[in-house]
Image 1: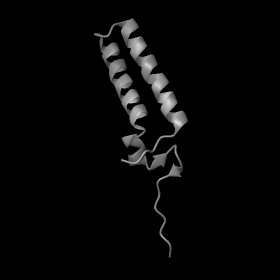
Image 2 (image 1 turned 180 degrees about the vertical axis):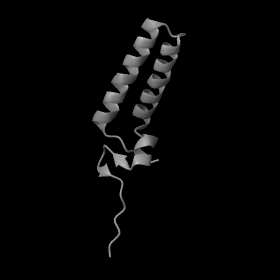
Image 3 (image 1 turned 30 degrees about the horizontal axis):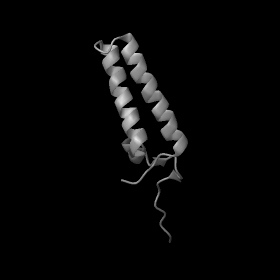
Image 4 (image 1 turned 135 degrees about the vertical axis):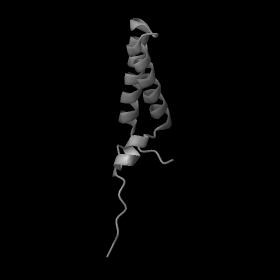
Length: 74
């Protein structure tokens, strides 16, 4: 698994993940909205910690160095 997220991207995901967790705690963790926020929080924090986003790989995007395209020379 090659990292495909830059430092800024990882920081933003961490802030969003923490914000979602705090909001889930304040609004009620057992409600449907709270559960959705917990899921968002876990996904954001795990991808921020790993530096890897599977969606970026599927879209061939990287915030580290642009696109993940292999060039073929003719």
